[in-house]
Figure 1 (cartoon, rainbow, N blue to C red):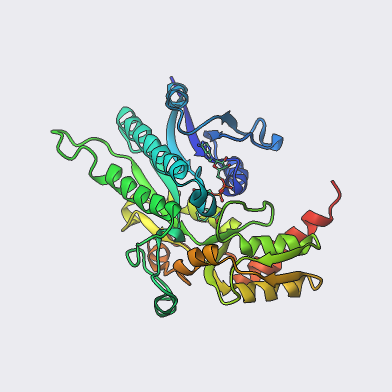
Figure 2: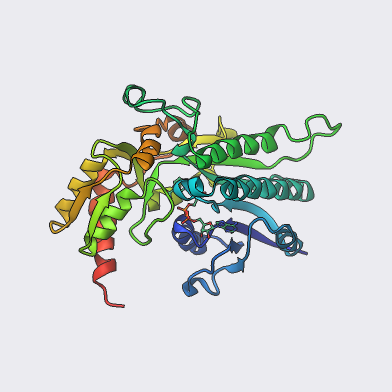
Length: 339
Ligand SMILES: NC(=O)c1ccc[n+]([C@@H]2O[C@H](COP(=O)([O-])OP(=O)(O)OC[C@H]3O[C@@H](n4cnc5c(N)ncnc54)[C@H](O)[C@@H]3O)[C@@H](O)[C@H]2O)c1
């Protein structure tokens, strides 16, 4: 008999770090983590870490020969800025990697006779606002609006959402028997901010970078204009969104892809909050017009009404709590605690 397990890809990343801490406390299933990078030693004994490439089919086959995978949290990806430097490599990881896992989940659903749950973190990058005037006019976009991404990463996310829906509802639609299909669920996250990890490779990184630089007494040149606006969310809410969506009864869900958000603010407002918390902060604005263009294509805010209605989504950290209770105290402590 195979042991039941939950697979978390990209576990060594920013969300992975917060996510496995939270899941390791709550879940009795074996937690199998997969990442090309090692995991910090603090997780030894709590999870079974497989260091390897998501694209390695032999590795995935070995995993399912040992474990009955019941849930997949597929966090591994190449993020938006990094993906623009190596678009084809990003497509490989983000699309082919996801397709390989969807295939695995689909086969496992047949074996088990019940759906494997497939949880996917999508992004505001799936949207593409054509210009700033439209961005200002449609300030809280719905899931089906403005699905015209301008980055490889955004295209990858949008297509993988569609693949997830396909594998959950239409897979082998011409076969005589309807197969047991997987259960794909996705959230479109805004920019995420963690107090405990520093992001890299994303285009919303200017927010967290400002905070982490200020707390270390380092100068920071923000790569977008002062009026650049996108939505953000504190990392504990992101973890909570993934877990709450995974636990929601299937019959309550009216869609497979949900917006979730907490607060929107401009880069200038972000900087004001950072300067208030760290009065010595040295923040300047030196927009990189190309990265600015990507941020301008992302919506100013998300309408997450459907997530609220269907699975009770509500961020615990609004703007005040995010800065005053989560970000500022923890980041301050991170850089003042010796060792
Ligand atoms: N951080 C954000 O603001 C944000 C916002 C929206 C969506 N997301 C999504 O959430 C997920 C996690 O994001 P994150 O911020 O933790 O990113 P991250 O870059 O910190 O982590 C991604 C992890 O994936 C791993 N990885 C990359 N290619 C791999 C491969 N071929 N095989 C195995 N592992 C591989 C990396 O080593 C890394 O540890 C991603 O899918 C991302 O698109 C993040």
